[in-house]
Image (cartoon, rainbow, N blue to C red; front, side):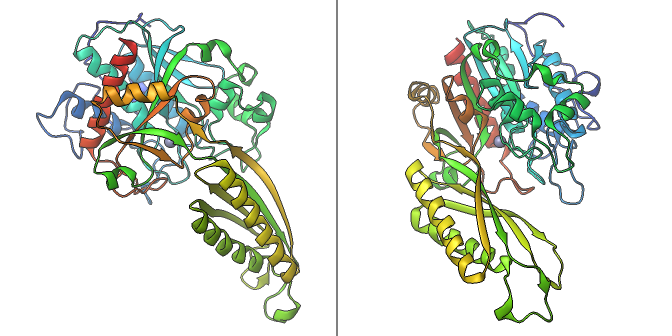
Length: 446
Ligand SMILES: [Zn+2]
């Protein structure tokens, strides 16, 4: 691949070969009939490029029935997204590197320390939306294009990144690519994680042509990041309420996942008297209600969004119910108190129901405060008017914040819906996000 094209224009050719599987969408800078909703004839080059890139990704891993995405780490859909990334890097003459953890990098300038890095992820939750993750990667490429349009020559290297397996949909641990890179998860523990079919991360990487022996903390790659800025669709209605298309993140609420096992006694639904039952579903249901009330009173969030029931028969009192609690709070003390209170309520209810309750912690992510200096530079680069707001959602930026100066930009989400096919951001707001990201990159790398 050719070297960095510092003064170059975005290549006016479609991404090469498999870059846009099945889409037929034009490459960057090439408006065409495939440009869809929001691509106005005669619109700005950025608006046309944005729509073209989003349309090119649109068919990959999409369930035609629901319109939702299933782009799990190291699956065929994930590999197709990786091909798309390679094509976009090549179309811009950016050197692409893949680190030992499967994170993708596209370089404008020579890879090395002090780089200004921007990007997000391309994988999805089950039945996810089109914007969570891809918006940050697409915006990163479009911001590079915009700077090149303006003949900006950055003094520092600029890199676009797509982190591997951010959602944790397949192996149960979120942000695996950034956690491995930064040493936030131990290599052997990560490689031994298994998916629902029993396939380990190591085997999944091998099957996708990656070498799991190269996984793990990578001080050299991490050491190249002078600053990381992740642009992301907002996963709430904060910016809608503020009437602003773009915001700067202050930090991420502490959050975690806990597994609850409710163990009772399987029995016949038609012949077992209510008084004789040890029904774990009853204890589980009361715990769900209790979690909701305690979270509301604490100004926090608590969700049971996943449950497995054994034997899961219509006419059977269950023997076991496993439910997973996701809890988030503005600060760590509130989170600890909330989780302890929910656990205590479950245990007390279990004693009344004759059900044993066991709680195990699956993961806890501490509060993240993004780098104050970098935040101030973002706010200033955006003209000083961008609001600042926290989020309850985890991101790769939250993992990296422990090791490198990190900041986030949010783009308004009109409904606040995320992790759903209904997730959406208006093209005009996405373009405003790209302008903002370009201004930030110019400031940081200039
Ligand atoms: Zn995301």
